Length: 194
View 1: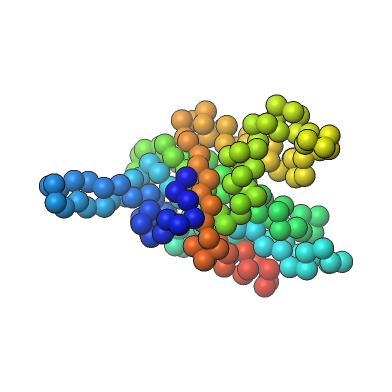
View 2: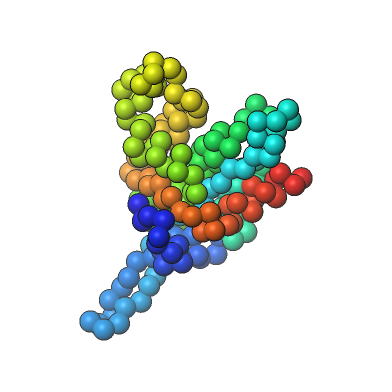
């Protein structure tokens, strides 16, 4: 997608309760304006886990769709999901579910054409952009002949991406630095604090 070095403020265009991507409109050769692309949204997701590997770990997700958006999520996960990786992937699932619902309702009468899942999880981004096709071809068995870790979550994510594609919505995964994913991170931390 954009890469970690791209400042999200150059791409993101918040409007009310959603965050859209920007697009330039040329006014002349020397000037251009930025406006929101109402058919392309950015959803920030993050998972958090406290006491990872300990006797009583706790995990939560944060999904940030926009300022005060009804689609934002800040919730604890079942203790069986209490690892960093599971929490990150669960946040991605919730983010894609929000995207599907937004697409179903439309934005100003238009359906989406693009969803960008913004995350600081290289694990999620690499899994869904580099590894998942090979995993699916191998029945989610890795090179060591073992079941891929968290295969059921990657299957869910992949299914949701395909479901959106069937609605003509392209899904991209954008790996950002942690400091560029503050809103989703805060929602996840808020859930852990409850």
